Length: 602
Image (cartoon, rainbow, N blue to C red):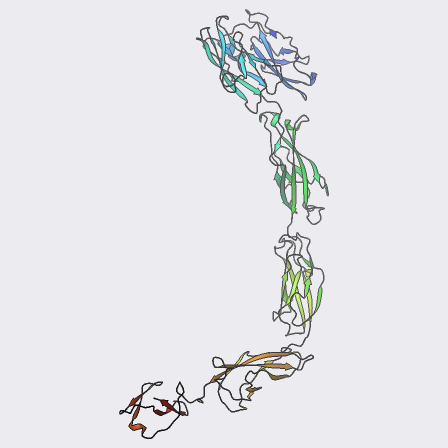
């Protein structure tokens, strides 16, 4: 408590012998006084910096050290009553004017540090009334008093002392606006209401927190020094207007630490991670790894030793660019294969220092010379990036010399090109095996009249030997002749369209062709004969009748043609009731026409 020398004189306030006993830490404590006219000297006394005619009735002293952060209250007693003009300068903080009712109710703003420890309640300030005490009482209303959160603040009805009842959390509520008034004992308003502003002073009780525990970023190899990779951001729930929430970032560990332990730098205030290593050393193919892990620490209190910290991990991947052309492991590849073989005959291997899982490392092969007939194809094995050469047709040549080129899916960077090592020669020697003759066409179709003479020519068979590199002869033979009508290309029996071996007028036989290779090879082909009908069957009446002859038939019977398949028989005069045999002659329209005698029983 500091006492003014006189209540009735306007003399300067002397140095107040106030020991800052509420603070620990000795001379390492830094103090701030709510009234700029005062300061705490090196002996821990609250003293004026100049002649002070007036002072606030309550001063607050904020002490801060590496081990303490607290606020103490100093009551100044014996102050003279001041005019409203001078009171503005005494009670104001900057342009802030304390609330005052029309009848001299003085309500200075109050401050309290969060997280204070017991004992409670603790006086945080005083409301002053110039009315005569004893005939009225103080009342405190609003959120924090008689409204939720209820009971945080109380006021002594007689003295006007405002107290806090428990520890506060600035991150929950950072200020309270209450109303103070005085009433008589009957409850009638005497003074006010006046605004009481209580501000909660922040303590550094929240650590910086990263949104994620692990962050990922990428940087292209060869990027210039100073390239931004990613940004780390942490949040501190403390007062952003104080150092309690002033964060500073730092890289405390890099793994691995080769080729340099400081390959990256983080802007301490913004959290931007940038490259420090030179672009020539940032080479994905020569670095010990393509992934680096950084441990990032965010510290509040602007990075001072007493600051609280939060930690996160940044994983940075060095991505690939196509700065290496693929190269064959050999300049010459050779293979001996049997003709007719299928599948891969040669696997071509390449080296590419770029990432095999990207277009910068994946290979594309092409045949650029030596295959004018397009007898080969080459594809990329997706599992190992090798080139797989496969034949399409061997017969044209016994030896093949192919020139193969390899490229990447992605284009090379401007200063890199494909060299001689990106091409290779493949020599394929075809080992011949005897292949059977092939009939053409197959089947061979001809039209023939049935019943042609024995030994008649039927068809000329045609089979070729695919082994064009060998001079071979071909022999033909009948393999399957169900009716036994053929002897190679001539008839050995009568062709009959009505034969049960003929279906839909077609007769099918199979021939075999055999070459004189070692061992001999065979091939088969079909001959289909379409048989044209020959008039070799006389008509007959169905059902069959008995044969017989009688004279004078034309005087008794008359036959009249109805159409090409029906005729009408008429009786010319009456006959006795008896059994009669009527002989009939039936003739067809074939060439030559054929006739047949039959008798009709009546």
